[in-house]
Amino acid sequence: MAPNVSERTYIMVKPDGVDRGLIGEILSRFEKRGFKLIASKLALPSKEHLEKHYADLKERSFFPDLIRYMHSGPVFCMVFEGLDAVKTGRAMLGATNPLASAPGTIRGDFALATGRNICHGSDSVENAEKEIALWFPEGTLQYKLSQAAMIYE
Ligand code: UDP
Ligand code: MG
Image (cartoon, rainbow, N blue to C red; front, side):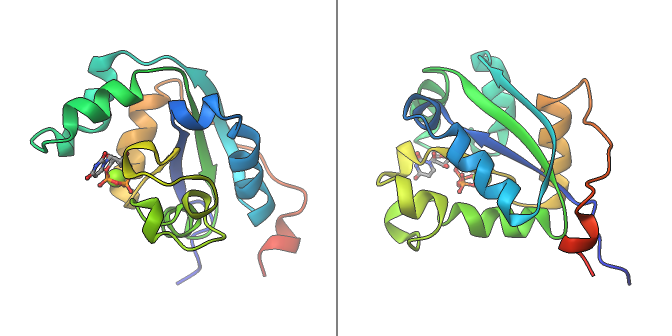
């Protein structure tokens, strides 16, 4: 089967990451890795919107704190496209608990606490598509990178 170079993932700099000036750093890591940015925006989502994004976690004890944290300031929303974007995006983020994240990962380089882990990344292709539809109802862009032949065989 031909490799799927059109896989999409939803990456979001959380309010602590925005406040700490890490939008450019995080975006840059995905760009440099070879992923294609196909949508981005700064947003101030409602609590209801954030509750939809984290609907799978609504029974968890930390859910109210998570929603308060995510609602404390703007988030920077991005969609990246490329080979194995979901799995590689998660690897680039590191573990949910930054203390368990290897140095070199985003959380392993810039965060210490699970409740302030600066960045979100989709955990499956199915969830990525749901999250992209939730955050970018206007859709994503289609265009070709002139460097594609230097990134993929
Ligand atoms: N979270 C938390 N306490 C926990 C687990 C998760 O505050 O015990 C927060 C943390 O910000 C995490 C988010 O909830 O990033 C979503 O949790 P999930 O298990 O989906 O982790 P992720 O996919 O972000 O690594
Ligand atoms: Mg998750």
